[in-house]
Image (tube, rainbow, N blue to C red; front, side, top):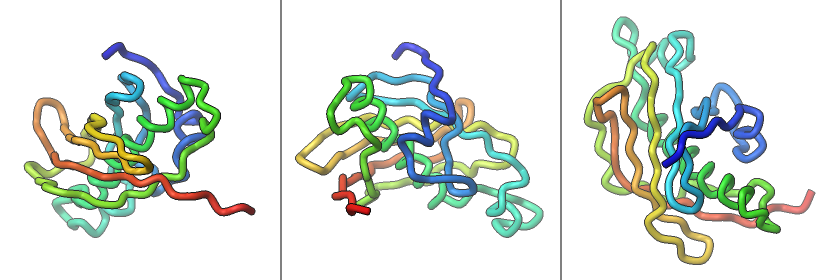
Length: 155
């Protein structure tokens, strides 16, 4: 996968998430329609670290999973944008399911979380991904996610 640099503003043009619930800082590799690698700097001042857990902060597994889902959504959105797909505007994707998620090692403030997602199957509006989060050479979490494209409500 060739290295690329996707700006935060481009990420925000695709994902509806905003701080403190945006968990992707940058995209570092992209193979359109196939796979993505993104990063998230785990900042000590993030609100979830204050209570999870005082004295030994770790990123909650559910937030690691959400970060992986955001990376997977970026794969779909960026792939469409690069193809000049008529539906290239940000797809409305929701995490439908997570399966076999294993939390192997905690992630802590100061680390950079690498988020990898590989599209395994696409069936209509459903997208099935193999995902893995790591910090350095250490695996933090891995499993499978299903995202579903939902209809946009007319304003």
